[in-house]
Length: 430
Image 1 (cartoon, helix red, strand yellow):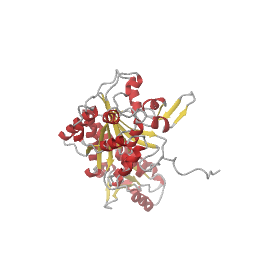
Image 2 (tube, helix red, strand yellow):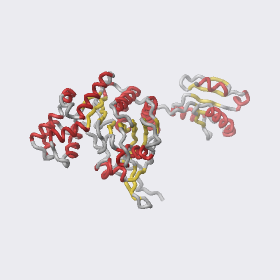
Image 3 (tube, rainbow, N blue to C red):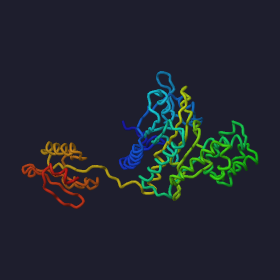
Image 4 (spheres, rainbow, N blue to C red):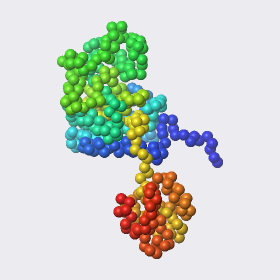
């Protein structure tokens, strides 16, 4: 019985990935991976399911409670689909702390799940690069990740004026909350979320937005002044604020290294609860721009403490595929689609199936991606299929060719035909 109630659409907030979509995604993933290995980072992975408490302890209320895809397994344990990687990474490090060589440079490209409202740049299922360096207390960890990011953008041929890294420091936010505003702990997360929404609200409306948090006129004025700060403002308080001191030092080193496309942005907060110092996001600033950060991350020096382990310095980013693919497509940075099939072996007659199969196997064994016709069809139809698929070479093997010990090789671009031995095909098409 046909079930007409079944939807042909994927689950809300997820995507089907057709071959051309996969080509663009793999181009991005291959770039992430290739550059990470160039920097000496090693690849790792974790289970797609974890104990739900792993995320509730340190990820923050919004992610830990509201966005988890969680369920109770048959053993009565509450399990969650992985919404992010950092807590799982911390668990891995904690479980073999004495066996792993420090510093750790690891990366992962995996799938993640968050139950949130799907919108442009945000999905319920998404893939993400996580790249982290652990065991480095100095700002050289931040600098190395920033260099990695800029090298990835260079590999993607991203125009310099289309993206920008924005950096802040959670210790600077603590200085704002405790020393300047002197607000209660219950207001701090609300103000943090408000600052995180700064770019989404018209500047003229932002003071009223702050007043809704029960801030006084004086406190609102202080927040607005804080949002106008630059590095020079931080110079004047670097002896009072650890965050200001770290930011001044970081930007001084970046300048020495001639690293551009990086600015101080006092409104960068990052919602996750475990960040302890530098926080960073990257934005599309060209054309109309993407509404969300291409990636985010920061320093999380205390995360191993949730496992009863001594803390270890750590810095990393999570670089999502959704907004980044939107970015590279909007600037036409994805190479022209290529299905990677190099040769098509025609089938002239069903009686020749064994011979064409042997020929296809020979080509594959020599590293040539080969598509074989396995059911009989008119040669004209086979060639139409080849043109539609964009396959550059065709091999034709008929009775005459078998008798002479040769094959016909056709260049589909130039339309030239070559009568050659099968052993010469490899050299000819390489």
